[in-house]
Image (cartoon, rainbow, N blue to C red; front, side, top):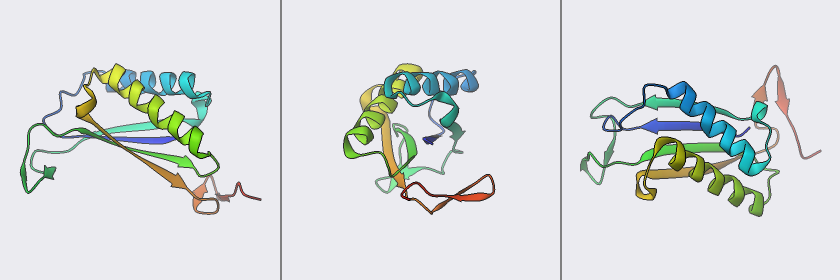
Length: 124
């Protein structure tokens, strides 16, 4: 973890090389936060036209929606560093303006993640 989920509206100009872009985001996030790249994953999906509404009507100027899940053992300062670093990596990689990006940082609690056959616990 972090696990990054990028959701683009159909109006977003998706690059041809999404895989390379995701690798760039991961590398930059790793560099800015000190989190090893092997612990960071990212996905990208484009929503079909009409599947993303805001303000009660269709809008062609919707931001890139990003969810980032991190373990709750990161303190408030580290959470801020991760959030700022992720924003910078996404802005740089996808050549966005700040108003074209929305990020939600979520905290995964110990004992609430199942991975590779076991429940992960970090507050022992």
